[in-house]
Image (cartoon, rainbow, N blue to C red; front, side, top):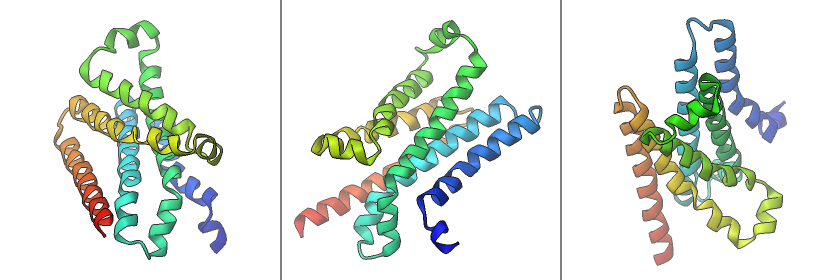
Length: 194
């Protein structure tokens, strides 16, 4: 049992639980938990997992000798793919609601949707190449490609700020993103000096 809890399938089960819960609530109680809740919650989970994915590098730099930091580093791609999974769920809910390509196209130029579509477009190649085969095939280019996560993250949070009824929570998360990236930059600069 203990080995299962430390395994990748266990992590994926844990990462899937919020999505399963959202799906069940939407199916079981569509009047109480409808489109607005489903699209909001799926977007929140995509953003939270993205923040966690981005936090792995500063955590690894700050806690190099800790086993849990090494474990997080080994699972960073899993967290990133899970973030993409929730972003895809979020996008799928939006497309389901619109139910027509012309309706989606008509709204695509609105700033909050444009930011969301651009973020999603940047995340697709990252998700597709987040596996060992792609890492080996792309070699050094893999790391360069995966730096797209930074502009994608900016677009994700821009999408959230522009689409929120009350952007306060979105701005708090922007602050967390800035904090994570600030710590990462400082720790990487220190590492180069030493």
